[in-house]
Length: 477
Image 1 (cartoon, rainbow, N blue to C red):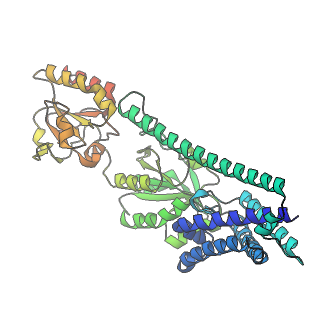
Image 2 (cartoon, rainbow, N blue to C red):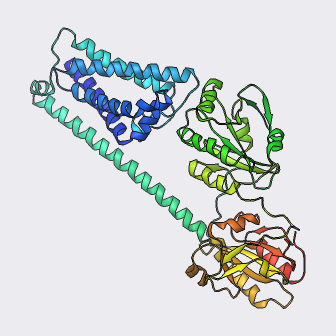
Image 3 (tube, rainbow, N blue to C red):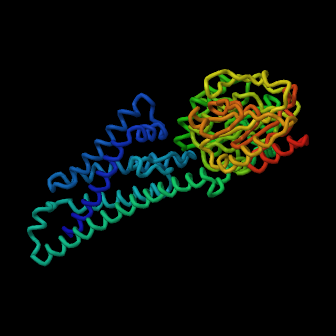
């Protein structure tokens, strides 16, 4: 019995020590957990620190025999509070991240979280029950009561547990390192053109946007067509209750709706409890906060996970799915750009620096047909067609369009490409996006008056087809 109680105390102490230490190492995540559970922002930070210290204090108190009863009582009290708070959140449809063990366990709460805490509560209750009316043994006195064989067995199992923990730690870190190396290797192979780039998430750009019917927070029905009547450019952001990234992004969503009102419409599409979503929308002042029944709308747009976002222009998909706050911020920057130019429109009078810092304007190209080639010296697909496009450049006739290379990267990297044609620098790829180029290599043809004379061609094969067709006077669609 004494040995069992000592084992239970070790389990409780180890669990609470890990929980308290990891919470101290992740103060922002712990504070966010308090906010998700409904704590006021003014006390969330201090409460997070106090909880970490309380867990460490319980972990330390349960080891000495004279304090074990109080340590077990403290752990039981904390576990009851945890179970009550998690049950309340689940009852209201909130499945936010737990951060029970800091960044080691940032998964959404669920009934498994309650079950884990209930098992620990039973262990704490068993220690309290075993301590009633009797003196709990200390670890030193218990060890001294063992004979040589028993001591050897205990030492063996302690050594075995230590080796198992070290082995598990090394395997986890080895797998993580191997995963990072594989990701880097895949990225290098894609850049060198040795393997095709993985498909971008979401529906193909240019396909019709799926129609949907979702509920407004006041009970009304909102459709894609209704949102398009507000603005032909829509940014759909998919969120859900209990998503830390979504909660962190909500103040930005409210600001974007105010700042970019009239330029494009932001619609936030969530799911889950109506009550919790109303509270989020009211807390941050977010308009166009809409509700899907399950995940039917996000599935239709292939927006897996939250937060994610997709841009829709004139009823068509205008971007790949952006996942995570950083990618959504970049998509908002893209949404501010004017819609891509269409065939027959006059090209904008863009001014770009060449490799020597001199300004080149597209207006100055008028009078001669030009092939605009959107380039990136670090793009493996660009390097794969470099010899072909340079051969085309050498073989062009007088009536062929002139080449202008619009590239990202540094002047030095672009000089090393060896083009005869002038090169200008498009930092941030904004000019390429204005013409509707979704990547590199891409190309578009301008006529003598500076109008768009072809569709934007993306990929080495399509670009070379446009270049060769333009040389013999074909119009490429």
